[in-house]
Structures are given as C-alpha cells and as structure tokens.
Length: 107
Image 1 (cartoon, one colour):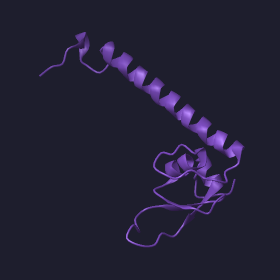
Image 2 (tube, rainbow, N blue to C red):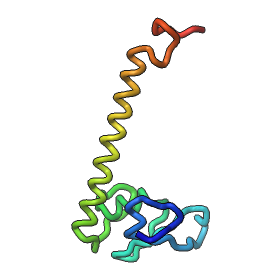
Image 3 (tube, one colour):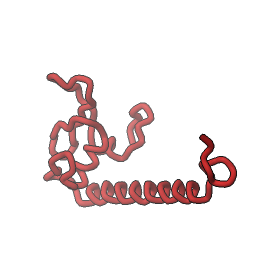
C-alpha cells in the first residue's frame, strides 16, 4: 500500500484523491481506479461504489469481484462492531453503569 499520510481505509487502495472543481470545493473528491468516476464525499461513498450497494452513489461497472467482496466484508464487519458496541452500551445502561449508585438519576 502506498503511503497516503496514514490513510489505512481499504478504499484508498482502489481510488485516488483529485482536486474538486465547481461549487463544492470543500468536499473530498475521489476517482475510482476501475471506471474513473469522480465521487464526491469521501471514502464511505467510494466503498459503496465499489461494493455496488446502490447507496448514495452509482455502482462501479468495472470493479473486480474480489474488490467488491472486500468492500462488502468491510461493511458487514463494521455493522457487527456497531451492533456489539450498541449492545454493550445498553447492557451498561441496564446495569446502572451510567447512573449514580442504585440506578437512579439525581436531579
């Protein structure tokens, strides 16, 4: 992987940052390495583009199956981590970990 200032997301291996033009200059613009589509908005959109999820961006017509599967695995792992984190939070709330002793809130 090339050094891109600490950018470790897998989407950076399949896209490159380009200079954006027009009224949306504050956004990050990335160009897909497989279809040359310019994607505004960052690496999550590039991952959606490469995974062909149809979420927020047009799917890549030229993405290799192995890359598509890699992006889909990333989304599944992210969702699993998010769910585990939410469950841990809910368990902590239920056990009173976010309140003073006794599980009640002091006014």
